[in-house]
Length: 286
Image (cartoon, rainbow, N blue to C red):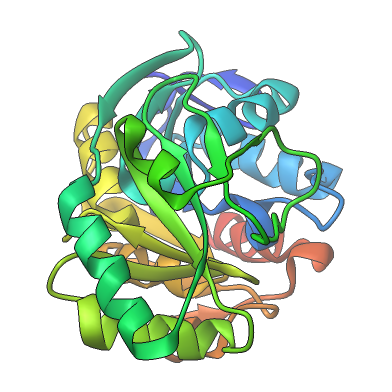
């Protein structure tokens, strides 16, 4: 199996006894899962992932963040393997700083989807993620960026969103909750675009059929592993397809109720080393 890495640095996966750990691939979401609320990874979780990779498994990060909003985190973690970014739209080689695959949103369909949603609920607050290794995140008037001081490009007109290829469009509503907005968007535009909720204030319109499972399956194929070999960790509804794809799924205690409902088990919160709790238990069963 191809060499890959955990947050502690490069480890050659697959060199240990295959029976040493019950899974060949450990897939982890970033925000609310691998990362604590201060955007760091605890020493305990780092050690657990290092032990797992030493036992023959590979670790892969699967995040809704596009590459430009992910790579600084991977660099800080010393992560040099593959990462699935942009809700599955991008497979990124963190060691080579190279985009291996990328899927873009049909802008005509996205515009039609937005028109249908706005006809139902009124004007939306908009942002969009441009395609590419250095793709900018465009933010329209009133849109609330949820995740701290990340680089964005303000725009004045919604028409400016469509001037270059996009991976996704972000939508917010002045009064509807995220769950309500996602439900309406799915109902009226789900035949045109994919709709997912990736976090507080983060409802996204994606290429139809795209999900974290799509990108993870592509990356897993490159690593020579299958769904049956995979354990996955997550915290939000955008992790549901990944959970359906993986052999075993683990929701964090801080996870959305929709994700907990489909998880095989629920672990501790991201602040309480929930990933490490599960990995340590599995390692102890060897």
